Length: 230
Image 1 (cartoon, rainbow, N blue to C red):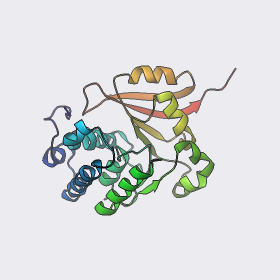
Image 2: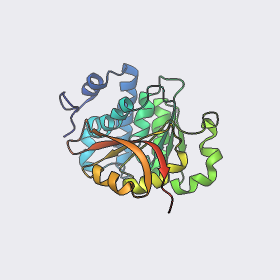
Image 3: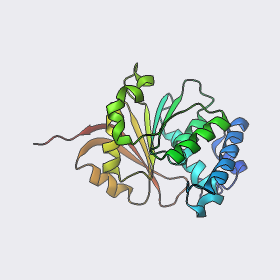
Image 4: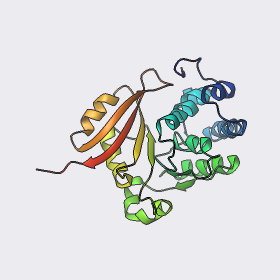
């Protein structure tokens, strides 16, 4: 069951609106998103079927909780392995009223990328959607970071259920600067993943208890640097 810490479980549009204090327009966009998710789920496995009736809490609120952990002035967001859009496209919906915010989603599955485009189109949310494997993107750095050329890199990098943290940092590292914040939704093994990642990487981190999953945590990563031999 999804739950917002210190409040009632989030099961509906109304629950989400109370928990995150978003506009009616944002809730309308998320309602459209939920409807499209149900329609596309009939032919594409976007989420675990058992979670479809818990979309507002299990998927939307789970994604939305990252916004409060990001720097308040973050403008350039990169979501790795976006899947059905969690957390990246949900964050793009929440950021839609901030004109300076720019969200890029990377999803290698062409059918899922098509779903993301349809949600973006129907909700009127402006996002960049790159249908490519993350590993191949560093060779296309100019394409990925065209919008970030002035500042150098991304303000926030997000991911959910993509890979264990050591591998996730391998994938994310080409897009990190000293000022980038990584926000990664993880399960009960978050501390063990941090310990494993520290064998190959130097970074500062914070662990935040998930607001929607009693066993979940969010790993916040800063100052990522690869360890060198010797």
